[in-house]
Image 1 (cartoon, rainbow, N blue to C red):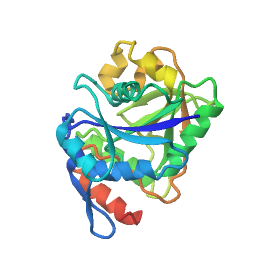
Image 2 (image 1 turned 30 degrees about the horizontal axis):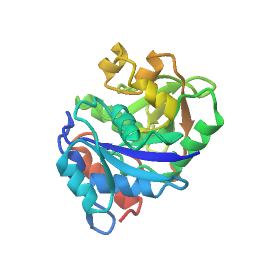
Image 3 (image 1 turned 90 degrees about the vertical axis):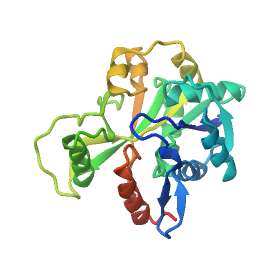
Image 4 (image 1 turned 120 degrees about the vertical axis):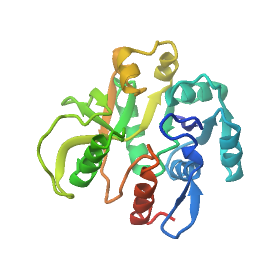
Length: 266
């Protein structure tokens, strides 16, 4: 099956405009933009036929082409990354079986997360798409709780059924728990990692569905699939000691740079 990674990249983020062009220093002190680090993460995934950056912004295009990325220009009317992936896939001739959305603000995404997604999607005919979930340790969960206490919108959590099909995704911490956890303790909360593998047919259908009320309230594009009765396979992945966080707010820069050093990423 032919696979394509699209990195949707917009400049006008509501919470953090221009974040994809922010420099992040790695373990060797070398600074690279967020979008370059996300592209490098995508290029490290095995078994992928093509990687492109999809944007509507000339600043991101010029930066991405400057470090060697292939860029597809998409319209400014795309309301989320999934729509941008669908538009990019169509612009490339609609010729891929699986399209992966690796978000431009997730440079810490390990290659094995994406490889597991593709494998699970191909083997499960009942799933329209697949997405990874990572069991939070106490450190991660406390990070979520600190964000919420400070009024910041941080990462996303997921709940799923016994067959690993998603029940819901939220920017709140779900399921609710009053327990306290040490940094290395396992918790009942799963961090939704913002990567998606879509069947090409499901991605095409996405553009025909209107935005639903849950998607509108949460600001989570994947809820459109659930609101239209399509299954999302949640793929449990292992961190293997690799720290993960998205760049959601300006306050995340230091956190992500610390994790780059911990992960020994140059």
